[in-house]
Image 1 (cartoon, rainbow, N blue to C red):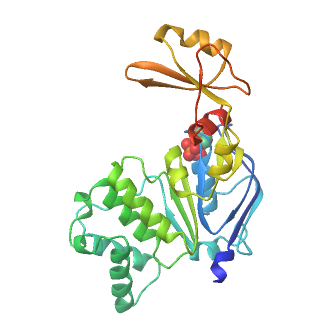
Image 2 (spheres, protein in one colour):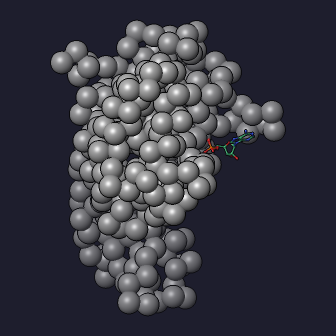
Image 3 (spheres, rainbow, N blue to C red):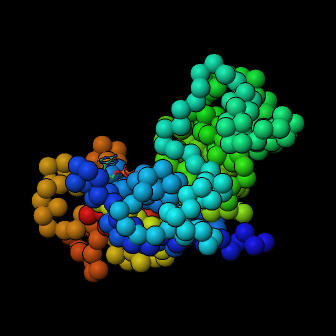
Length: 292
Ligand code: ADP
């Protein structure tokens, strides 16, 4: 299918807000069909990049080309092919899921009633909400609301879908269902998932970047990233009062409490001795190592 060859090329994108914050600093990323992860701590610049890709704000410099379209010059062309689930998707109270999607389809220019009926029913089925279509969306759980959010992003059959921090506030079951839905959708499209949750990227994304303070600080696949850390991560259970001392002596990537006891993970290319054990790396260590 030709859709398998979709490419989104982001080049040298920079943006400084009027308050002086540089939210994007020469961001360059090439994204292919499938699920792409944009990982970074709060304030990294993820939403700024997502909003720029969604043509809701302009960068100071740089270029974005999607499937041959220069989207900064032709935002309208891009919007026809874009589905966007913003971080805070405000759903209307006291209107049911069917009515909401029907209304949003009208706004997206689908004027024929029959066509809309077919579309809205297909979307409700796709996100597994058909049986709840007459239920008021303000009574939906967090996971159901996010599925309505995805359904609205799919109106008009877009092939670039941007989802900003979608799993915040979902319980594990809802998160799983939402993951499956996204994975399913991404087979024919580019889906960009912005998140600060490392597990989202591990479970879903073929490729990913880590952003920190406006910059891309890592670009690769989750497996490559983890492989690079093999044999270099060591952990040790320590006493609470010792954390500062260990931080001064070692490259501490993370601190966790296990059974009320702090356990630190450090990066070291050789065996640090001193009671440390080798630890299997995970994307979490990659993340912490890149945002230091
Ligand atoms: P993220 O989505 O990774 O949390 P954002 O893109 O929201 O990052 O923010 C990046 C930086 O830009 C932060 O320091 C944030 O406070 C700042 N910022 C975001 N939007 C604006 C804005 N409209 N005006 C000024 N500063 C902003």
